[in-house]
Image (cartoon, rainbow, N blue to C red; front, side, top):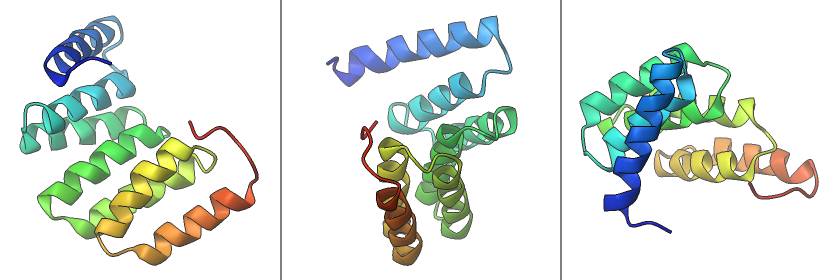
Length: 130
């Protein structure tokens, strides 16, 4: 495991390289949004990148998670909740998606939405958490 001071710059290089290869890569754009949010502490920049990542790949749960978390940190809880619910609904069988999004849903007071999606996940049966 790398320390953030090593990992984030490497991730930025990799995501930037991916975008040089394919400028429409929503996942790479989402990675840059996460770097802007969690490493650079650049909420406005993270929001721009997160919105772009969703526009580039609206079928990706990861793009909706990063947008939802960015909106949550800005205080836009209603819009954040919509993005987080959408992420789970796009990938109902992923423990990683569920844990990331439901934690944030609980933080904004949407316990019922988090519980309903968790019940649906558990009813689907055993699977890998990631």
